[in-house]
Image (cartoon, rainbow, N blue to C red; front, side, top):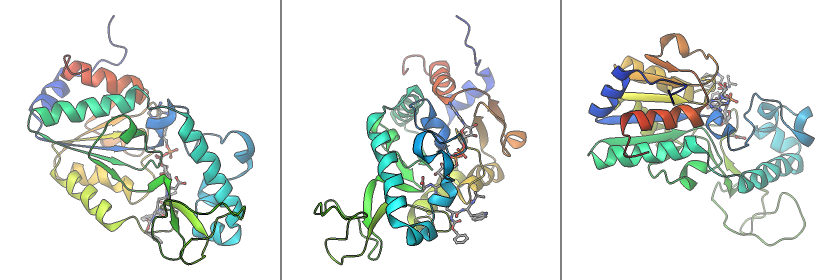
Length: 255
Ligand code: BV8
């Protein structure tokens, strides 16, 4: 059966000779696992809330219980879903490249941990991870806390409210993670931007940084984004299908 999303033979050749590949993923890569993206309508109780409004330090200061419950709802959703073929294809891509002595960096804006569950190893989490909780005062990750019924739970060490270990709008990204991501973008031969609206900064600056350093930038998205006109290759379609097709075209034995 002919591939619905044919991969240009030129791109296949570039992948086969690539020495350094970097990937930036966004919420779209988790969409086929059933995790709602930011710009899709939020289902259920949260339809009337704007995530950019809930995911801020101000919202947490104003209504810590509401923000804690929103993240508890999302955490429970993420625990229930599985990685999709797009996550699996990225793990296969990493394994195939490492086997050939090439380097691979997976930079994600997602906080769901699905890349790690699919087997990806070198994962740079720019926006934290919803499965981790930290003290809102000490910024230290907390593994467990007494169930007092109080929500958000108080930090077992200092009593300040606990919060999800994610980067909210208006907060700085983890410096080391972003430095790793910038270096991967600068050094990459190929930079894949998959499932991201390419709007949230400073993550959205990474494909442009790769372009400035003469990488071949490949966009994987069913819709156009601000990056589309400049991308070297545009593979329009769902990442679960396109990324699987890409790995199969480049390394049939790896898929
Ligand atoms: C910061 C964790 C410094 C929380 C998130 C210019 C420079 C610097 C900053 C800014 C700037 N302009 C504005 C800002 C502020 C802000 C920002 O970027 N705002 C945007 C809205 C303009 N940035 C910040 O605040 C960042 N911090 O810059 O610090 C600073 C400090 C103080 C003052 C100023 C600056 C922090 C940003 C991090 C926010 N936290 N997540 C949580 O998850 O609750 S971001 C959040 O949004 C998620 O991580 C999510 O990933 C991201 C949305 O982006 P996408 O991943 O792209 O998701 P989206 O829904 O938008 O798009 C999905 C795409 O998938 C679509 O294109 C769709 O077509 C596609 N798709 C759908 N289905 C599929 C698919 N693709 C493939 N396959 C499919 N099946």
